[in-house]
Every structure is written in structure tokens, then in C-alpha cells.
Picture 1 (cartoon, rainbow, N blue to C red):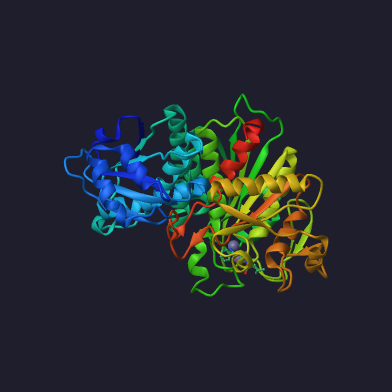
Picture 2: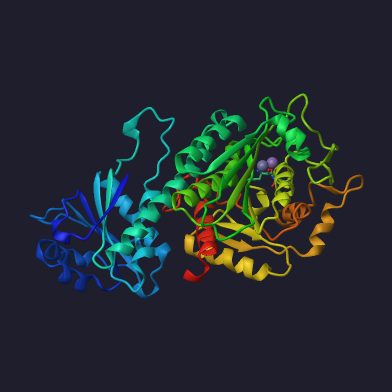
Amino acid sequence: MKVSVTTLPLHDLDVDLLILPVGLGEAITRAAQIGGVIGTSLSRALQDFDGNPGDTVLIYPEASRSKRVGLIGLGDRGRLDAEALRLAAADGVKLSATTKASTVALCVPDSPMDAESMGQALVEGFLLASYEYSRYKNDESKMRARTERLVLHASADEKSARRGAERGRVVAEATITARDLVNMSPHEKTPTMLGRHVERFGRKYGYDVSLWDKSDIEKEKMGGLLAVNRGSCEPPVFIEMTWRPEKASNIRPVVLVGKGIVFDTGGLSLKPTRNSMDHMKADMAGAAAVIGAMEVLARLEVPLYVIGFIPATDNRPGQNAYVPGDVLQMHSGKTVEVLNTDAEGRLILADALSYATLYRPELVIDLATLTGAQVVALGSQVAAVMTPEDTGAEERLAAVQAAATRSGDWVHPLPMHAHYGKALESDVADIKNIGNREAGTITAGKFLEHFVDYPWVHIDLAGPAFLKKALPYRPKGGTGFGVRLLTEFLRAYAYPKKR
Ligand code: BES
Ligand code: MN
Ligand code: ZN
């Protein structure tokens, strides 16, 4: 979709659909303000419109340049925020789809919010809500009508609105990169193919990519990644992405780690098919979020030195598959007793996290579809966030939570108190790879904690990464969760004074 910004008078906009977001109780004044043919027909339509979120009304003014005008409720304008605007934009997409509008103008409302944030939220919401995954669809007629062009109408502070619109477009497109990867058929994203996709993105957007093959991974002694890969016909790949701009404000990198299980059968501890294994092409959603974040960093030229690591393999039963009872020697040298081959994510992440210690990172954030327990605890709209309860933990957590609220990629903290770690004590090795029935998301985090020696944040996005039911601007399937969270977090980290 093409996105542009205009300051032309509303009456001069020549589009299939003009969308006006309007706050609660302000429709009458807004109609008077607009005046002309649009204003007149608006004031007549107002009997059917209050301005509550979700309210929409469609009018067809006579002799207006825009073929249709859609009103969209914004709710209480005193409480307007980015999420309300993304939701309003998603309502606009619904109107665009029902009217098959190929050109759409969307007005930035009058509000105390700054034009840049409004522009970003509106464009982001519109692009994300317009998303449909079509790679494998033959019949175009079964797809939604596509909007070709979105024009953001800014009445004041055009420059800021333009900056916001541009950022919203980049962030939405990178989120869509992540969604596409999650939705892709597993046979097209084997570890090797995933690596090739990332190489292509790196070339296109301007970050560096290097791929390690199995022999490199063996040399590095990544015992966790190699063990999970043993049942597979496809070799593992370790993907390294680097964004190191000259004007980076940090010397030591921020490292992002994404779980890259391209398909999780559970291995010999096989998953049942329905409502379990049938979603497991999404087990690389953490990796997809990191790939999307690297895209944003490079496209927005964020002045921060960031490295992304993705340990990639599938997890399958096979003649050589690792078995419950196997004791692994991990990259760090620690030994792990495997008691369930379906707790594979923590094994590949542990190796990536301990490899990251070599970089003396300022901060490491890992994202992983790690536990079913996360979905039970927090559902499919909120990810779990954990950080060791050490110095700086509060600040770190507050920054992640603030970024989550701003971005709409919500998180909620879970504790990492020492006693949870007891569940991982092994009879034969340093630790085992599963706990007991209690607090499964936390014990997975405690497992990973054994492999870090730097400030670290763990995000378990098992629920929000992949939806069974669509949300307003998140479709069924891959959501790209994490891209916007990381973007907000890393931008605030790079430009601390601006916030
Ligand atoms: N990939 C799954 C976690 C998952 C479950 C993601 C549901 C998305 C939706 C992970 O590898 C897994 O199988 N975890 C096990 C761990 C258990 C064996 C300790 C789980 O949560 O059941
Ligand atoms: Mn698993
Ligand atoms: Zn998994």
C-alpha cells in the first residue's frame, strides 16, 4: 500500500473513501467546522452516530469529490492514545473493505496528542488491519478488496504528521515481515531457507547477516541446538544479524535473541495434533520478531549497536532423535538432563544466550514461544516478561512495560524468585530441562537464567504470537507480536532524553 500525507482542504480530496475519526460528542462541531457539502450531509447523519469507539456511519454526500465519507468513533478525546487511534484505523479498514475503496484518505483528528504519534498510530493501525496472507491463495476473488493508496490528511503540523506516517509505515511493514514468516508453510522455512530469507532482508534493508552451518555450530559446541536437531533431516543454522551504525550511542551491543524452532512436533515427546502441533509452524515467532526489529532499526537508522541471534532448527522424532534421559553438554559447559524433548526451546536459547556472553552485551532481550503455560496464565493478548531480581531490574522492567503500553504489544511481569529454580534440580546433571506442573513459564525462565551473566529480559510470547481468533488489527495466525514492542523499547533506549 502506498502511503502519503496531504494538507489539501478536505473538500479537495479525490478519494473513494474519506475517513473522519470523531470524538465523543464533538460530531456537531466537527460537521460545522468542515462545512460545505460534506458538512451538511454529516450533520444529517449525526442522529445515527455518537462517537463511541466502534461507532461508524457511512454517508454519500452529493457533489463531493470523495465518493464516500465514513465517520469513526474515537471515544473520549481526553483519553485518546495510540491504541485508540490504531483501533479507529482498523474500523476504517472495515469500511474500506465493505466499500471496496482503492484510495482512502484518513484524517488526523484534532487532539492534544502530538501529530507525530497520531500519524504513526493511524498509519500503523490501517496497514496492520489491512493485512491478509495470500501467498498460497489461488482465488483472488476470495481475498478482501485491497486499498492501493492511503492518504493521511494533516491539518496542522504537517511535518510531524509526515514523520509519524513514515515511521508507522516502516513499523507496520516490518511487523508484516514477521507475520509473513510465521504464516509461511514450514517446508519453505527450513533453517537453511530461513537463513536465506534473512540474508535477503539484510541486503534489502541494510543490516549484516552471517549464517553458521552445522559444522560451525559443532565447532562452537552448541550442545543444546545440536541435540534438538538430531531427529531432523535438515541441518541447524545459527543466524547472526548486525546493525552497527557509525553514530551508535553504545559501545557494547544490545543483543536480541529469537527462538527459531521452525516446526515443533515435540520430538519423541510428541505433541497431539489438534490445537497443539497444528500451530507449531509459529514456534519461530520469537525469531520473526527479532528479524522484524532488525528491519526497523536499519530502515529508521536507529543510532544503536544491536546484534540479533537466531538458533534455528526443527524439533522432530527421528532415528537419531535425542531422547528423555539424554544428558547434554551445553555451549556454556553446563550439563542438562533432558526429561522431555518438547522442552526444546530453552535448549537452543540457552546456547544462544551463553554465546552472547562473549560480546559483553549491555543488555540482552530474548523472545520465545516458550511455554503453553504462558497462554494459560495471560491469554493471547499479553506476553509474559521476566527479568532477574537484581540491581537495575525495576528500571529495566519499567522501560519494557512502558514500551509495551505505547506499542500495543502488551506484557505483564512474572516473578523470578530463587525458590522457583529448585524445580530444575537434576539427579544426574547440573539441571534438568523441565520443572513440575507448577509455574511452567517461570521455571522455563529460571532455566534460561543459568546461561546469562548480563542484564537480561525474557519475553514469552507463546499466546500473542499466533491467534486462533482475529483481533481488530491483528489477523488470525501470525501477529508479528514483538516487533512493535522492540521498536518502542529500542528507540527509547537510543534516544533517552526525548521521552
Ligand atoms: N513451543 C512450545 C510452547 C507453545 C505452546 C507455544 C503453545 C505456543 C503455544 C514449547 O516448545 C513447548 O512445547 N513447551 C512445553 C514445555 C513443557 C514440556 C515443559 C509446554 O509448554 O508444554
Ligand atoms: Mn516444544
Ligand atoms: Zn517449542
